[in-house]
Length: 179
Length: 301
Image (cartoon, rainbow over all chains, first blue to last red; front, side):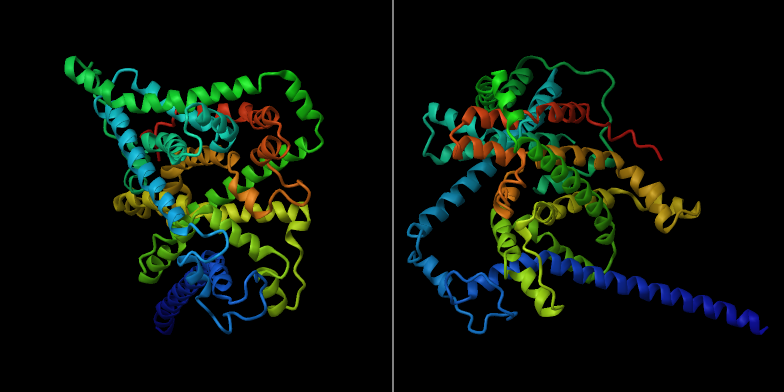
């Protein structure tokens, strides 16, 4: 009788122990992942908030003793060296980002709609040609692009950057939209 | 990237059945289809075919390749590229696959940590790489913490080839693992519960469930992602250039950065293009594999 009573009890205890271990393991993994993901971001804040210019050493303080937003203020008011045109540059980034996104989605969705929904004959040829773009990774074409954009009259022009972004983002969009 | 989440995993499990007889488009439908394809065709010819042809033309002289082989920095660069791609892609993919299982757990704090975990993917690669470069520098965060917590003098990370290359690989994994984790997570979510229920009746739980049920269902997607990721990592320029900077003394250069150095630092554009094009014999087979996309519907348990 006593055996019959203790068995389920120990089984239950074992079950509870295993569950506890799983929970603890998950919690540890989650904490490790948080540290892993946030370390470089933390480092960036540490450096940005440090009042001393040019200071990237870790001096034992987990948080700068006198954090200052001076760095941010100098950037926003365009006083910092090399950042006299901060807002102009910010606008450039925004312009490139928004237009690349818009053009990629537009061109990619039109092409993959024609190929996969309208079943354009020989459509798979287009998808495969698009994938061929990745045989030559973007950085491999730096030099040819540099020259070709010049011959297209696009050097010193944001549109050349947008064109390059769209070129390398669209094949992925076409592939994904067809799945 | 929203499409990635929505559409990627569909492929791993279900694909809308193809109609038996292929309809041929007629009349205005056909014209519309052509009009829809035209913008991409234009982009393809103007920004892919022409530059690529131009690159081939720039690097067509065999003497350039002889010069490359003769360059003492070329072979180590090829080795670096292979190591960077091999470890970078495979470690990242495998960890992403495992982590996607972790994030499937129904706990609010696990879901919340996912939001933080995808942060590296959101941060621009260049900024993240610069931050890592600072962290790993002498008296940076990593060595500073090592000496503060354990009293160890950390190594000078960028002063030794393997340490520097290892740092590059870790940074690459940091940056791109979340993206693939999300892809795998979405694919796992598409696996319906009744498959697992049936497997449990047959006694597949825990590790066995992963090996015999989940992995076979994700295998094709895993292969597809690995191939695509390999193509991308070979062209990855940012990580090496900004984290180790190819240092010490160019011993951690990969083909992409070596080509850049030839072209812009040594003013030898043709040699630079030849250096990067020498990876084509490896890349083209991968593209061909990708083109014969594994039929994701033919998953068998």
